[in-house]
Length: 421
Image (cartoon, rainbow, N blue to C red; front, side, top):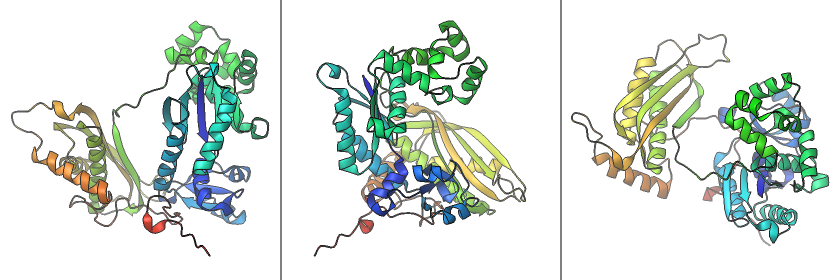
């Protein structure tokens, strides 16, 4: 049996843990640079705030309905997520962290000795008690059905107590008939449209299709999903693996017209990619750099360009990757435009200890010990302390965060003060 544990309104719940007055109040969390809505509490959803809503367009609605608006506090959310996952890991021998607010648990052999429904209630109680984050738990024989069970637990909290188990075939069929086809885990917009055209409106009708049709039109991935919904396990927990590509992209705090400013951002993004490469002990053999203007400013000329460069040698040196990133930027930069976003993506990885020495050009061997020392210092005192000379020494990311909450759990100067009498 599998369980999918999903944190309820995770970003909003993180803010409420440290500001209890916000409970039952509408909350929205904005993206980088306070651009658009990326998270909403149930109360904000009921007031008609859509996902992705541009904050400037909905400012009047926010003020009129007393909606609490927050800049995204990823340091806080990441730390709270880690606390939730650490608690969940005590309830099952195997766990797959699926996203920042979701995890699959595997209960192999548990059903012989445990009442999994009661176990789910215990998980919910313990996580909420330890972290303050409310969760929903869906339990089923397969991962896909656990997703369905979780949706039911979250949709009908009064009846389920935020915990629902699909432990009989009768429950499975009833749940699949309730779930619209476009809400099935793994069914994208394109497949949902195709299935609707075939008069398949819910998950149960999808399981009644012929295997041959599903394989021909949705590949083996769609066939596995069909089997999972039929209660036949096809997907096991995934073990963490090294990333195949690493990207660092950001919107700027304002439109940049000065090339020097964009060069600094690109250097910072390249250094960030390099640090992540070193963390997984990989070297990159190719780099992609892109820039583009603000697509929402129709009054300004538009420009978008990217370039991929094959590197002369594999490297994870921040110095070398920043140099190559600026070379790529030189090839695509054009004067006369107001740039709003840039990004660096590194790819084509090889293990750091399998590099082949070339005849003419190689990574500077002294950089390896230098980068190791740099990573150790930054890990000890903070990632914003030791940088390349081409980076802004004051800030890592230049983002507008006018409504940022304190870093309650990750910055000692912002820890809550408790006064006792």
